[in-house]
Amino acid sequence: MKVILRKDVDTLGSAGEIVNVKDGYGRNYLIPREIAYPATRGFLKVYEQEKALRETKAARDMQKAHTLASKLGNLSLEATVQVGEDDKVFGAVTAQDIADLIAAKGYEVDKRDILLEEPIKALGIYNVPIKIATDVKAEIKVWVIKG
Image (cartoon, rainbow, N blue to C red):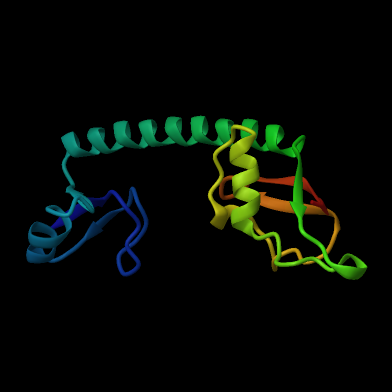
């Protein structure tokens, strides 16, 4: 049985390829799970339409990501922390703290997308990278100051 793959499958091939599989595997596994279509002219047209929609959506999402990255690139945040003698910081500024500061400015960023190597434990100015999309990153300035 020939099928058109809708998604990448490690053992078969990548999306869009027409591959030959056993009838039971195609009919009972690939097609019901919407991993593949039967290789007919009608389904080939359906797949091409889906592909065009996915590409349009991906381009729109990438444009939004670049817009957000440029807005976040101009952002400067102040994190106030308590300090003791000799300006020793109590606690640390974590990715969650930075996400909360960004949310206070009106932008939604997941804390897992903040690429902080380790929590900030000293006063100063830090450039913190943020992953917006697969190939899009922004860098914000975080000022850690006495509170």
